[in-house]
Image 1: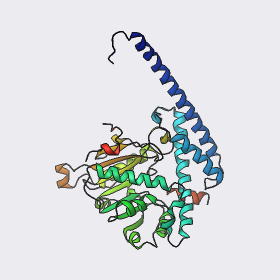
Image 2: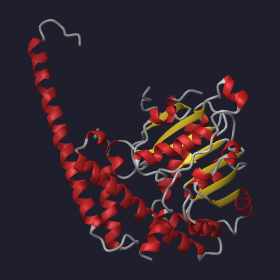
Image 3: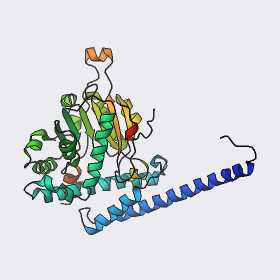
Image 4: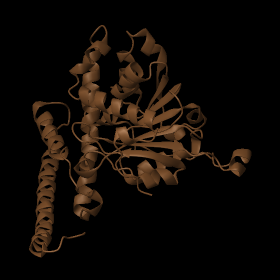
Length: 345
């Protein structure tokens, strides 16, 4: 840092303030982690994660605590806090699955469910997230509007697919993959009254680990945040997609950053690169959109592999049943943050 002559005293004051600011920041982070740990303990003691005033209040408080911008690096947490975070992410996933199943059933009672999607309490978040993903995808230099789209981990209330198909990709067909047949039945009911979406939206009951040749037919694959909640599970899913997606196809991965990583798994862009993708953009939003977004493109095959067909061997991945079904059965080069307007054209 350059300093003007005669400002020695001011410079000394600056050097004294910096450690104090760092200490204050660390104290705030410790307090936030303590609060999150307390909420996690309360959530784990709930008799059920099905929607109720108590469940809704606790998760609202948790999300509110995690949303403000934070420099917390969850990879640096103690082993005990890492375990707490892993348990909390699974609890959030279970609760999210039950919440979506509940509202999917509610919406199915209307003549045209799609006219009432705003009843879902986080509908606006999905609207903003889908707009962000579409904008990042369009600005990232991938090929023109996609004709075929896959959404992996669509769930019983596939709001992302519905918003993308209706508002951003009106000419694309969507294949929605979920391992849970009941989730797909719920989702299918939501489009029954809309002839256009019913014709363009398919719901496939399958573990993506068992999908091979079909993956090569998609222009874009979206990977939901809760598909592969542990790091090794997510890595296997991404590796499988890298093995079977077509060269040039786009991959949109949802991740998390800062304190939001207590709600959703973090995906390392290097992990995506190792799976055979070029990472085009990494965006950590602020405000109500919780998920970070990674845009990647399947790299071209090496000449030898393109000729011989190497690199497309089948790899079986094992994942548990989808969250709503599981819960009902039981109970009933690092990329920097890239603003949208600064993405390469």
